[in-house]
Image (tube, rainbow, N blue to C red; front, side, top):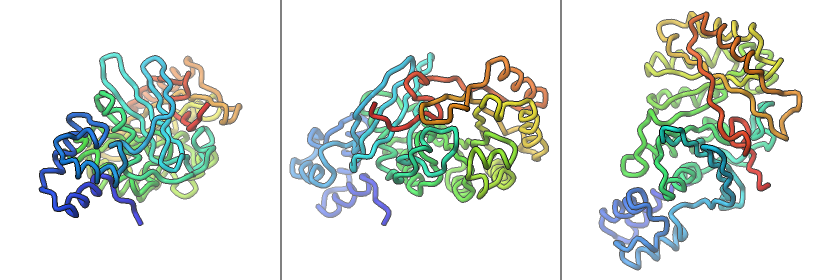
Length: 344
């Protein structure tokens, strides 16, 4: 049975205790406006209600516990302990203009086994609940950080977790986190049912497709999911997403030296994205320099900057929109593909 969120539990508890309806707003205002982290400190509430909240939900409004925090230039990585003592990581990035962006996890581990990703070496432990997903952000909120933008690019494949959509409802609920849909980004390796559901239910949320090779055989080697959902089928779903939403789709591409960074690859990416109809200008390639880890193959190396420059020039010469992702946090294993729930 799907777990219900703490916010639904609070509503049910208030109904059960025959409390007036405004109590729910008092509780959510305490959490989201006053940043109160313990139910006992919600002194507007009757003592008996506070005691019931603690008995039902525990003493803290945030259900996950930070057990370790690593800090680097512009980056904080937090390791959280879940109720069953599993671990997940979340990352806060602060840009020079003051904008704060968050990379959060949706699964403990990941079962898809992409060859270049540290998280994939763990296997899938379990899906996170909607509370465990959103509480990663609640932790930062309660500690005084603004939630400017959120990416579901942490541990796990977001669209493989059915609880994701409950989490999105919580994050966009005006009475809770109140985040605008366009401040959220879902990253996927190409799960068609999830892409189609996102298009239907959250058309304004940003979508990123992790491509990493324009050739099916090679992509299947790097990312086994390609055997189930090959590139052509995913691109057709992305075309439909663009037609229905009018929103840009991002194509993420990790550059592995001597593997997928040839100029032939660049040309093939351009060929893949051109000729897709009236929405083709809404595809945008984001190149990601590879971040090595101790648990990914030693044969994978970061492409040299001069070579990346040539790769970019090929794409631009074919009128492909392209940027290189600014890298933060690789020194604390907080960059793309490095999250590993380590206590070390």
